[in-house]
Length: 153
Image (cartoon, rainbow, N blue to C red; front, side, top):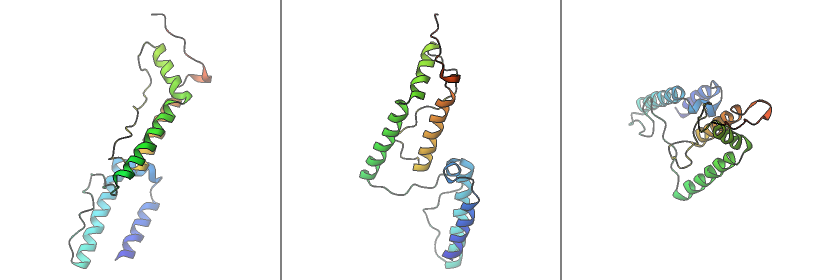
């Protein structure tokens, strides 16, 4: 029944540590997809109707909700603004000075710039990628804000 399905979803959701991180982890997506498939199968058996085609197969990302082109244009603009904000930050500028001082060698693992045009990433996963990117840039900074000296090679 719908009320038991929503209570199951509620109990499943409450057991997750954080929704933004959990939804971005493949194992959590697979568990959620498996739960959705079993809930759909139980509902189909109870009502003798065909299972919903909207449920993702185990191991696949659940489909993103439909959005109009205008909505995607708005999302892309917000995502581009987020990337521009990080690139204008002191952390990003310091990272680029550090890489230039090392002759272009990247010695610190920093994830690449998230793609603002990727329509396969949900809002929460996008925000998580940007958060990790910015955090890695912060951790790549020299201690006490010291600027690295350019190499003389």
